[in-house]
Length: 421
Ligand SMILES: [Zn+2]
Image 1 (spheres, rainbow, N blue to C red):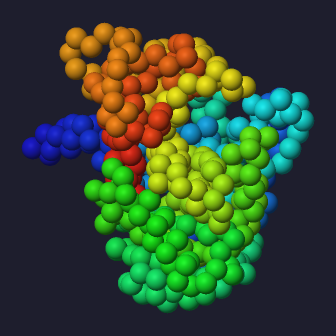
Image 2: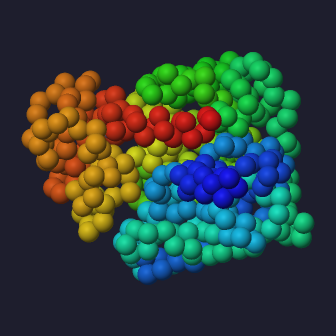
Image 3: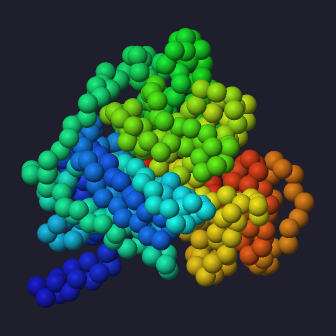
Protein backbone atom coordinates (compact mmCIF):
# COMPACT_ATOMS: atom_id res chain seq x y z
CA UNK A 1 0.00 0.00 0.00
CA UNK A 2 2.81 2.34 1.02
CA UNK A 3 4.68 1.65 -2.20
CA UNK A 4 1.61 2.29 -4.30
CA UNK A 5 1.13 5.67 -2.65
CA UNK A 6 4.74 6.57 -3.40
CA UNK A 7 4.35 5.66 -7.06
CA UNK A 8 1.13 7.64 -7.29
CA UNK A 9 2.81 10.66 -5.68
CA UNK A 10 5.68 10.41 -8.13
CA UNK A 11 3.35 10.25 -11.09
CA UNK A 12 1.42 13.26 -9.83
CA UNK A 13 4.60 15.25 -9.29
CA UNK A 14 5.81 14.46 -12.78
CA UNK A 15 2.47 15.43 -14.25
CA UNK A 16 2.40 18.91 -12.74
CA UNK A 17 5.90 20.38 -13.13
CA UNK A 18 4.52 23.87 -13.83
CA UNK A 19 2.57 23.92 -10.57
CA UNK A 20 5.48 22.54 -8.60
CA UNK A 21 7.67 25.40 -9.85
CA UNK A 22 5.38 28.25 -8.90
CA UNK A 23 7.29 30.71 -6.72
CA UNK A 24 5.54 31.46 -3.43
CA UNK A 25 5.94 35.21 -2.94
CA UNK A 26 5.80 35.25 0.86
CA UNK A 27 8.31 32.42 1.12
CA UNK A 28 10.96 34.28 -0.88
CA UNK A 29 10.27 38.03 -0.74
CA UNK A 30 9.88 40.71 1.94
CA UNK A 31 7.29 42.77 0.02
CA UNK A 32 9.67 45.70 -0.53
CA UNK A 33 11.18 47.03 -3.77
CA UNK A 34 14.85 47.00 -4.73
CA UNK A 35 16.12 49.50 -7.29
CA UNK A 36 19.26 48.74 -9.26
CA UNK A 37 20.80 51.64 -11.15
CA UNK A 38 23.02 50.09 -13.81
CA UNK A 39 25.42 51.40 -16.43
CA UNK A 40 25.91 49.75 -19.79
CA UNK A 41 28.92 50.78 -21.86
CA UNK A 42 29.78 49.72 -25.37
CA UNK A 43 29.14 49.77 -29.09
CA UNK A 44 28.08 47.20 -31.68
CA UNK A 45 31.53 45.65 -31.08
CA UNK A 46 30.46 44.60 -27.58
CA UNK A 47 29.29 45.95 -24.25
CA UNK A 48 29.58 45.49 -20.52
CA UNK A 49 27.00 46.18 -17.83
CA UNK A 50 27.37 46.65 -14.09
CA UNK A 51 25.37 47.79 -11.06
CA UNK A 52 26.34 51.31 -9.98
CA UNK A 53 23.86 51.83 -7.12
CA UNK A 54 21.84 49.49 -4.94
CA UNK A 55 18.86 51.47 -3.69
CA UNK A 56 16.21 50.68 -1.11
CA UNK A 57 13.20 52.17 -2.87
CA UNK A 58 11.19 52.20 0.36
CA UNK A 59 8.01 51.27 -1.47
CA UNK A 60 5.85 48.17 -1.40
CA UNK A 61 6.32 45.72 -4.26
CA UNK A 62 3.79 46.85 -6.87
CA UNK A 63 4.30 44.00 -9.35
CA UNK A 64 2.37 40.74 -9.34
CA UNK A 65 2.90 38.35 -6.44
CA UNK A 66 1.75 35.33 -8.45
CA UNK A 67 3.31 35.95 -11.89
CA UNK A 68 6.94 36.23 -10.86
CA UNK A 69 8.53 34.45 -13.83
CA UNK A 70 8.29 36.04 -17.26
CA UNK A 71 6.33 33.69 -19.56
CA UNK A 72 7.32 35.52 -22.77
CA UNK A 73 10.53 35.05 -24.73
CA UNK A 74 10.62 38.73 -25.65
CA UNK A 75 12.95 41.69 -25.12
CA UNK A 76 16.63 41.91 -26.01
CA UNK A 77 17.59 41.72 -22.33
CA UNK A 78 16.33 40.02 -19.21
CA UNK A 79 16.94 40.29 -15.49
CA UNK A 80 16.82 37.01 -13.57
CA UNK A 81 16.95 36.65 -9.77
CA UNK A 82 18.07 33.22 -8.50
CA UNK A 83 18.23 31.72 -5.03
CA UNK A 84 21.97 31.73 -4.22
CA UNK A 85 21.86 28.31 -2.56
CA UNK A 86 19.94 26.32 -5.18
CA UNK A 87 20.03 28.40 -8.36
CA UNK A 88 16.26 28.29 -8.53
CA UNK A 89 14.71 31.16 -10.52
CA UNK A 90 12.64 33.41 -8.28
CA UNK A 91 11.92 36.36 -10.54
CA UNK A 92 12.51 37.32 -14.18
CA UNK A 93 11.52 40.06 -16.61
CA UNK A 94 12.43 40.74 -20.24
CA UNK A 95 13.06 44.29 -21.41
CA UNK A 96 14.86 46.36 -23.98
CA UNK A 97 16.83 49.59 -23.73
CA UNK A 98 18.16 52.55 -25.64
CA UNK A 99 21.61 50.99 -26.07
CA UNK A 100 19.98 48.28 -28.20
CA UNK A 101 19.00 51.00 -30.67
CA UNK A 102 22.21 52.99 -30.31
CA UNK A 103 24.41 50.11 -31.44
CA UNK A 104 22.51 49.99 -34.76
CA UNK A 105 23.25 53.67 -35.50
CA UNK A 106 26.28 54.63 -37.67
CA UNK A 107 28.05 56.05 -34.59
CA UNK A 108 27.12 53.07 -32.43
CA UNK A 109 28.88 50.67 -34.80
CA UNK A 110 32.28 51.78 -33.48
CA UNK A 111 32.02 54.54 -30.85
CA UNK A 112 31.57 53.44 -27.23
CA UNK A 113 28.88 55.20 -25.19
CA UNK A 114 27.36 54.78 -21.72
CA UNK A 115 23.69 54.21 -21.05
CA UNK A 116 21.74 54.17 -17.81
CA UNK A 117 19.31 51.41 -16.91
CA UNK A 118 17.14 51.04 -13.83
CA UNK A 119 15.72 47.68 -12.76
CA UNK A 120 13.03 47.35 -10.10
CA UNK A 121 12.90 43.99 -8.32
CA UNK A 122 11.13 42.48 -5.32
CA UNK A 123 13.43 42.44 -2.26
CA UNK A 124 14.47 38.85 -1.48
CA UNK A 125 14.47 37.48 2.07
CA UNK A 126 17.76 35.63 1.60
CA UNK A 127 20.91 35.68 -0.51
CA UNK A 128 20.34 35.78 -4.26
CA UNK A 129 22.26 36.08 -7.50
CA UNK A 130 20.97 38.63 -9.97
CA UNK A 131 21.82 37.87 -13.60
CA UNK A 132 21.70 40.58 -16.27
CA UNK A 133 21.16 38.66 -19.49
CA UNK A 134 21.39 39.57 -23.16
CA UNK A 135 20.83 37.73 -26.43
CA UNK A 136 23.68 35.94 -28.15
CA UNK A 137 24.15 35.70 -31.91
CA UNK A 138 21.45 33.04 -32.10
CA UNK A 139 18.95 35.12 -30.07
CA UNK A 140 19.32 32.97 -26.96
CA UNK A 141 19.48 34.70 -23.57
CA UNK A 142 22.83 34.31 -21.80
CA UNK A 143 24.08 35.66 -18.48
CA UNK A 144 26.17 38.76 -19.15
CA UNK A 145 26.85 39.96 -15.60
CA UNK A 146 25.93 38.17 -12.38
CA UNK A 147 25.94 40.04 -9.05
CA UNK A 148 25.33 38.71 -5.55
CA UNK A 149 22.84 40.40 -3.24
CA UNK A 150 22.47 39.74 0.46
CA UNK A 151 19.66 41.69 2.12
CA UNK A 152 21.59 41.66 5.42
CA UNK A 153 25.03 42.76 4.24
CA UNK A 154 24.86 44.46 0.81
CA UNK A 155 25.25 48.23 1.43
CA UNK A 156 22.19 50.09 0.17
CA UNK A 157 21.58 53.71 -0.72
CA UNK A 158 18.24 55.07 0.33
CA UNK A 159 16.00 57.18 -1.82
CA UNK A 160 16.20 60.89 -1.09
CA UNK A 161 12.86 61.88 -2.59
CA UNK A 162 9.95 62.07 -0.15
CA UNK A 163 7.78 58.95 -0.19
CA UNK A 164 4.48 59.41 -2.00
CA UNK A 165 2.24 58.47 0.86
CA UNK A 166 -1.26 59.50 1.73
CA UNK A 167 -2.92 58.09 -1.38
CA UNK A 168 -6.65 58.59 -1.39
CA UNK A 169 -9.10 56.77 -3.58
CA UNK A 170 -10.22 59.80 -5.44
CA UNK A 171 -9.00 61.17 -8.73
CA UNK A 172 -7.02 64.38 -8.50
CA UNK A 173 -7.02 64.51 -4.75
CA UNK A 174 -3.37 65.36 -5.01
CA UNK A 175 -0.51 66.99 -3.23
CA UNK A 176 1.96 69.14 -5.09
CA UNK A 177 3.61 66.44 -7.09
CA UNK A 178 1.64 63.22 -7.28
CA UNK A 179 -2.00 62.54 -8.10
CA UNK A 180 -3.68 59.28 -8.90
CA UNK A 181 -6.75 57.24 -9.58
CA UNK A 182 -6.76 53.82 -7.95
CA UNK A 183 -9.01 50.86 -8.65
CA UNK A 184 -7.33 48.46 -6.25
CA UNK A 185 -4.12 47.11 -4.78
CA UNK A 186 -0.99 47.77 -6.80
CA UNK A 187 0.16 44.14 -6.86
CA UNK A 188 -2.89 42.88 -8.77
CA UNK A 189 -3.42 45.96 -10.90
CA UNK A 190 -1.33 47.33 -13.73
CA UNK A 191 0.17 50.52 -12.33
CA UNK A 192 0.81 53.13 -15.00
CA UNK A 193 2.83 56.14 -13.86
CA UNK A 194 2.64 59.24 -16.07
CA UNK A 195 5.67 61.48 -15.58
CA UNK A 196 4.54 64.97 -16.54
CA UNK A 197 7.53 66.88 -17.91
CA UNK A 198 7.26 70.68 -18.21
CA UNK A 199 4.01 71.03 -16.25
CA UNK A 200 5.43 72.46 -13.00
CA UNK A 201 4.14 75.97 -13.63
CA UNK A 202 0.83 75.01 -15.25
CA UNK A 203 -2.25 76.31 -13.52
CA UNK A 204 -4.10 73.58 -11.64
CA UNK A 205 -7.33 73.37 -13.66
CA UNK A 206 -5.43 73.21 -16.95
CA UNK A 207 -3.14 70.53 -15.50
CA UNK A 208 -6.10 68.45 -14.36
CA UNK A 209 -7.59 68.69 -17.86
CA UNK A 210 -4.34 67.36 -19.37
CA UNK A 211 -4.28 64.48 -16.87
CA UNK A 212 -7.88 63.57 -17.67
CA UNK A 213 -7.09 63.60 -21.38
CA UNK A 214 -4.07 61.33 -20.88
CA UNK A 215 -6.08 58.90 -18.79
CA UNK A 216 -8.68 58.78 -21.53
CA UNK A 217 -5.99 58.22 -24.16
CA UNK A 218 -4.53 55.35 -22.11
CA UNK A 219 -7.84 53.60 -21.49
CA UNK A 220 -9.78 54.71 -24.56
CA UNK A 221 -8.97 51.94 -27.04
CA UNK A 222 -9.32 48.16 -26.88
CA UNK A 223 -8.09 46.04 -25.26
CA UNK A 224 -7.27 48.68 -22.62
CA UNK A 225 -10.86 49.98 -22.46
CA UNK A 226 -12.33 46.62 -21.39
CA UNK A 227 -9.64 46.34 -18.71
CA UNK A 228 -9.90 49.87 -17.32
CA UNK A 229 -10.57 48.56 -13.81
CA UNK A 230 -7.38 46.49 -13.95
CA UNK A 231 -5.37 49.73 -14.08
CA UNK A 232 -4.19 52.20 -11.46
CA UNK A 233 -3.12 55.55 -12.89
CA UNK A 234 -0.62 57.98 -11.33
CA UNK A 235 0.56 61.42 -12.42
CA UNK A 236 3.92 62.71 -11.20
CA UNK A 237 5.23 66.17 -12.09
CA UNK A 238 8.96 66.43 -12.79
CA UNK A 239 11.80 66.60 -15.30
CA UNK A 240 12.49 63.22 -16.91
CA UNK A 241 15.21 64.64 -19.19
CA UNK A 242 13.36 63.84 -22.45
CA UNK A 243 14.55 65.61 -25.60
CA UNK A 244 13.55 65.36 -29.25
CA UNK A 245 15.98 64.34 -31.98
CA UNK A 246 17.16 61.13 -30.30
CA UNK A 247 19.77 59.47 -32.55
CA UNK A 248 19.17 62.26 -35.08
CA UNK A 249 15.48 61.43 -35.67
CA UNK A 250 13.54 64.68 -35.22
CA UNK A 251 10.31 63.09 -33.93
CA UNK A 252 12.00 60.53 -31.72
CA UNK A 253 11.80 61.91 -28.16
CA UNK A 254 13.54 59.83 -25.48
CA UNK A 255 15.55 60.32 -22.30
CA UNK A 256 19.10 59.19 -21.57
CA UNK A 257 18.62 60.16 -17.90
CA UNK A 258 16.92 56.98 -16.74
CA UNK A 259 18.11 57.32 -13.14
CA UNK A 260 16.72 60.87 -13.00
CA UNK A 261 13.42 59.55 -14.36
CA UNK A 262 13.29 57.07 -11.49
CA UNK A 263 14.26 59.78 -8.98
CA UNK A 264 11.22 61.73 -10.18
CA UNK A 265 9.05 58.62 -9.75
CA UNK A 266 10.33 58.18 -6.21
CA UNK A 267 8.18 55.53 -4.56
CA UNK A 268 5.33 55.66 -7.10
CA UNK A 269 4.21 52.20 -8.25
CA UNK A 270 5.11 51.79 -11.93
CA UNK A 271 4.53 48.61 -13.90
CA UNK A 272 4.79 50.95 -16.84
CA UNK A 273 6.06 54.53 -17.24
CA UNK A 274 4.67 57.06 -19.71
CA UNK A 275 6.41 60.42 -20.01
CA UNK A 276 4.18 63.25 -21.26
CA UNK A 277 5.83 66.33 -22.80
CA UNK A 278 4.15 69.69 -22.39
CA UNK A 279 4.21 70.72 -26.03
CA UNK A 280 2.21 70.25 -29.20
CA UNK A 281 5.03 68.94 -31.37
CA UNK A 282 4.42 65.52 -32.88
CA UNK A 283 6.63 62.85 -31.45
CA UNK A 284 7.28 60.13 -28.95
CA UNK A 285 8.77 56.70 -28.65
CA UNK A 286 8.69 53.56 -26.54
CA UNK A 287 10.91 50.68 -25.49
CA UNK A 288 9.62 47.37 -24.14
CA UNK A 289 9.34 47.35 -20.34
CA UNK A 290 11.46 50.52 -20.20
CA UNK A 291 9.27 53.58 -20.80
CA UNK A 292 7.01 55.27 -23.38
CA UNK A 293 6.88 58.94 -24.41
CA UNK A 294 4.13 61.07 -25.90
CA UNK A 295 3.46 64.79 -26.37
CA UNK A 296 0.23 66.79 -26.32
CA UNK A 297 0.06 66.72 -30.13
CA UNK A 298 -3.46 66.34 -31.51
CA UNK A 299 -2.49 62.86 -32.74
CA UNK A 300 -1.68 61.68 -29.17
CA UNK A 301 -4.96 59.74 -29.14
CA UNK A 302 -3.47 57.49 -31.84
CA UNK A 303 0.24 57.78 -31.12
CA UNK A 304 0.11 56.75 -27.47
CA UNK A 305 -1.79 53.44 -27.96
CA UNK A 306 0.74 52.59 -30.70
CA UNK A 307 3.64 53.37 -28.35
CA UNK A 308 2.01 51.31 -25.60
CA UNK A 309 1.96 48.42 -28.07
CA UNK A 310 5.78 48.65 -27.99
CA UNK A 311 6.22 49.67 -24.37
CA UNK A 312 3.74 47.38 -22.63
CA UNK A 313 3.17 44.69 -25.24
CA UNK A 314 6.62 44.29 -26.75
CA UNK A 315 5.00 44.46 -30.20
CA UNK A 316 6.88 45.25 -33.41
CA UNK A 317 6.01 47.94 -35.93
CA UNK A 318 3.97 46.41 -38.74
CA UNK A 319 4.64 49.20 -41.23
CA UNK A 320 7.16 49.39 -44.04
CA UNK A 321 9.87 52.04 -44.26
CA UNK A 322 12.76 50.89 -46.41
CA UNK A 323 14.49 54.27 -45.95
CA UNK A 324 15.35 53.43 -42.37
CA UNK A 325 18.92 52.36 -41.68
CA UNK A 326 17.56 49.30 -39.85
CA UNK A 327 14.98 48.32 -42.52
CA UNK A 328 16.48 44.85 -42.80
CA UNK A 329 16.51 44.31 -39.02
CA UNK A 330 14.23 41.25 -39.24
CA UNK A 331 15.53 39.72 -42.49
CA UNK A 332 17.72 37.27 -40.62
CA UNK A 333 18.12 33.54 -40.08
CA UNK A 334 16.21 33.85 -36.77
CA UNK A 335 12.56 34.48 -36.07
CA UNK A 336 11.95 38.01 -34.68
CA UNK A 337 11.20 38.06 -30.93
CA UNK A 338 8.02 40.12 -31.27
CA UNK A 339 4.79 38.08 -31.50
CA UNK A 340 3.16 40.11 -34.30
CA UNK A 341 5.67 39.76 -37.14
CA UNK A 342 7.35 36.75 -38.74
CA UNK A 343 10.01 36.06 -41.33
CA UNK A 344 8.56 32.50 -41.61
CA UNK A 345 11.69 30.93 -40.07
CA UNK A 346 9.58 29.57 -37.19
CA UNK A 347 6.02 30.60 -37.98
CA UNK A 348 4.41 27.77 -36.00
CA UNK A 349 5.41 29.60 -32.82
CA UNK A 350 3.72 32.76 -34.01
CA UNK A 351 0.03 33.03 -35.02
CA UNK A 352 -0.19 29.93 -37.24
CA UNK A 353 -2.65 28.23 -34.84
CA UNK A 354 -5.01 31.22 -35.11
CA UNK A 355 -5.23 31.15 -38.92
CA UNK A 356 -8.52 29.97 -40.46
CA UNK A 357 -8.10 26.66 -42.29
CA UNK A 358 -7.04 27.06 -45.88
CA UNK A 359 -5.43 30.49 -45.44
CA UNK A 360 -2.59 30.73 -47.97
CA UNK A 361 0.85 31.53 -46.49
CA UNK A 362 1.83 34.15 -47.50
CA UNK A 363 -1.61 35.70 -47.98
CA UNK A 364 -2.20 38.00 -50.97
CA UNK A 365 -2.75 41.64 -49.92
CA UNK A 366 -6.27 42.95 -50.38
CA UNK A 367 -8.20 46.22 -50.05
CA UNK A 368 -9.58 46.71 -46.54
CA UNK A 369 -11.02 49.94 -45.04
CA UNK A 370 -8.49 51.66 -42.74
CA UNK A 371 -10.76 51.25 -39.71
CA UNK A 372 -10.79 47.43 -39.99
CA UNK A 373 -8.17 44.69 -39.66
CA UNK A 374 -9.58 42.52 -42.48
CA UNK A 375 -9.16 38.72 -42.43
CA UNK A 376 -6.31 37.21 -40.39
CA UNK A 377 -3.47 36.15 -42.68
CA UNK A 378 0.25 36.41 -43.32
CA UNK A 379 0.73 39.60 -45.32
CA UNK A 380 4.10 40.60 -46.72
CA UNK A 381 5.46 43.98 -45.59
CA UNK A 382 6.15 44.52 -41.88
CA UNK A 383 8.89 45.42 -39.40
CA UNK A 384 10.10 48.16 -41.87
CA UNK A 385 10.78 45.64 -44.67
CA UNK A 386 8.67 45.46 -47.82
CA UNK A 387 9.97 41.94 -48.52
CA UNK A 388 10.53 38.86 -46.38
CA UNK A 389 8.74 40.02 -43.21
CA UNK A 390 5.02 39.41 -42.64
CA UNK A 391 2.19 40.78 -40.48
CA UNK A 392 -1.13 39.26 -39.32
CA UNK A 393 -3.59 41.78 -40.79
CA UNK A 394 -3.90 44.37 -43.52
CA UNK A 395 -4.35 47.11 -40.90
CA UNK A 396 -3.41 47.35 -37.23
CA UNK A 397 -2.54 49.95 -34.59
CA UNK A 398 1.08 48.89 -35.07
CA UNK A 399 0.86 49.67 -38.80
CA UNK A 400 -1.47 52.58 -39.38
CA UNK A 401 -3.40 53.39 -36.17
CA UNK A 402 -6.27 51.00 -37.04
CA UNK A 403 -7.62 48.91 -34.09
CA UNK A 404 -5.07 46.39 -32.76
CA UNK A 405 -5.16 43.23 -34.93
CA UNK A 406 -6.16 39.91 -33.24
CA UNK A 407 -2.53 38.85 -32.72
CA UNK A 408 -1.54 42.14 -31.06
CA UNK A 409 -4.81 42.16 -29.12
CA UNK A 410 -4.12 38.67 -27.77
CA UNK A 411 -0.63 39.55 -26.56
CA UNK A 412 -1.82 42.76 -24.87
CA UNK A 413 -4.51 40.73 -23.07
CA UNK A 414 -1.83 38.28 -21.90
CA UNK A 415 0.41 41.11 -20.67
CA UNK A 416 -2.42 42.81 -18.81
CA UNK A 417 -3.11 39.44 -17.19
CA UNK A 418 0.52 39.19 -16.12
CA UNK A 419 0.21 42.35 -14.02
CA UNK A 420 -3.36 42.03 -12.79
CA UNK A 421 -3.39 38.52 -11.34
ZN1 LIG B 1 -1.01 43.87 -35.07
